[in-house]
Amino acid sequence: MGNDDTGAPAADAQGAAAATPRGAALAQGVARPRRVARVQPATPEQRRAALNFALFAGAATVIFGPILYYMVLHWNAVEDYSHGFLVAPLAGFFAWERRRDLQRAAIEPSWWGLLPLAIGTAALTVGRLGTELTSMRSAYILTLMGLVLLILGRRAFQILLFPLAFLFLMVPLPQSLVNVVAFPLQLTAADWAVQLLYLLNIPALREGNIIHLPNTQLFVAEACSGLRSLMALITLAIVFAYFFRKSWLQRVVIVVSAVPIAIVINAGRVAATGILTYRFGQKAAEGVIHEMQGMITFGGAFLLLLAEAWLLSRLWPEKPRRGVAPRSPA
Image (cartoon, rainbow, N blue to C red; front, side, top):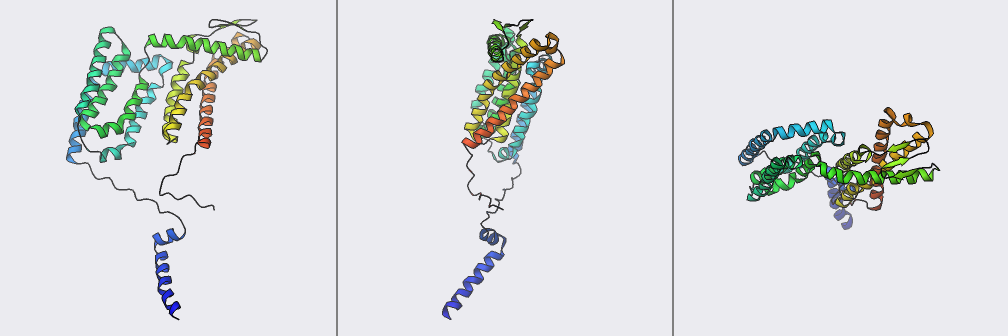
């Protein structure tokens, strides 16, 4: 009897604990979701710092206005940099995602902000004197970085570093660098395309960036170097890695792999042009068909990127966060 009397209160206590939502959840082995802490409203100091930053950033935008205007015209005129129209909105979205962290960050202005401001001023001066557009355009981003560090502080700078660095993707490369990079890409695309044509028993001969076929010849121009798809695919890889991968190692691998993927896909595009030209004549590889090839090959590059991400998730599965119980099978 004594044992029954002692066990009754314990059973009642267990039943009462199980009657509560927390007890029921623990009894079923399901972890309760964490409560999200409410963000406190901005302090007067934070509002004042945000206002100061907005004023100085607005003034910098007005000063750099003509430079930014001609950069947008560059995006519109040169298709290699048409992805620039997406960079600024995406950077703004990345910054907006961090708004809660910014509200919690302490305002600790740092004089180290003068360093990127000085570098930006020097880049603007050198660009003005030498008519170097890339330096002048990069100076605007460096100025924003300096203002964040100088007015908002180190913690805010750490939070906004990725969105600010992402803005560099909207700056077109200097033409001198394009000339250095594009021609090797042209030769690589032509050489790999010829090797693929050999495998398909199509006679072809490469002479520089010209592919000689029995009935005609193909000229791998700068527009066919793959630089456009390379820049666009790198931007897409960064966005994809940011949204769908938490491991920094996987992010780096995905972004770096965008370079060989773009080169291989572009070589396949040149080879496809050679096949169409050999089978159906020069007209079959021009106009709308040529443009469709670009869309199809870029889609293929993105599919390869997705396949690589899936393979990485199999080889290096991401560890579940602490406090999150695995789902029980249904």
